Image 1 (tube, rainbow, N blue to C red):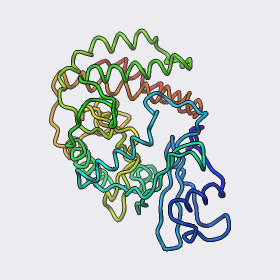
Image 2: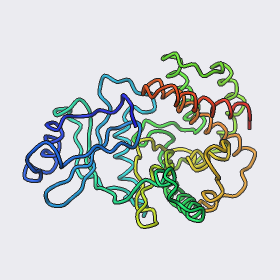
Image 3: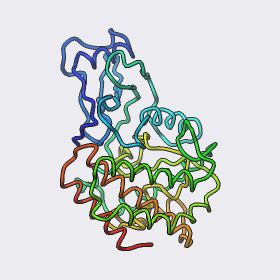
Image 4: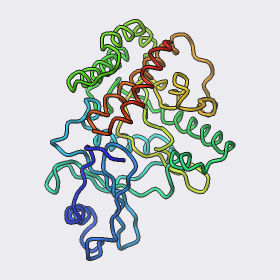
Length: 326
């Protein structure tokens, strides 16, 4: 997937990064055959680096310093590193191991890190190719729900960024996140096809429901099928943790389809997670969370220069949500 946030590097720079991490004896001579860019994802550029000792590693490089990112994406790589450590320490959810990180900006103009390779393919890609039977779709949906529930069991010290600073209340934290993304859109002149004042009014009508949340929990937020790696019929890894924070588990991606049917049938995820019917307050919170996602999806098209098709598709989801209400 193409995005201007992808900070591609020359073979010479990639070699220098790998040599700093693993030593020059781990790389073959020449400029080809030992690295491959992986095209999935919208934000970081990702390479597979094959070492001479047989290890297959993954290199992630943050966006270039001169490219403006959305407010919630600032410090995303540090967030991912913190998330990986938390998940490995507190859960049995399979995630890559951090092998090496560098924030010096001596070799390129951004942070980067190496992690272990997860053998398999993204579940979302298998769906796109039509390689998952209806029964297996149900099974994978339930498995994602169970994985997400385990992640959400990690308690947090505050609401907000994993490494702080945090907010004492979820209402303050989440309304701040909403205002940040709206500010991003206004600053870049993004047309939501509805007035920003209309969106803010809809938020104000429902914001009191956020006060029901008093216990911060680890939230993955981006656990869509594309971020679940599958091998031999089972989920073997969860990747891309740069959007994690401490908040309300009901904001998780698996619940989005409760508001937007285009995201599929939420039933298997809900069963795997162990969730029943939502209360009135939960429904209002869930609507706000889906609104936030829709706003991000529309506004990020301007920041990433992903084209009119993506903008129109995401704008349709936003209008669908606003028309439906809660």
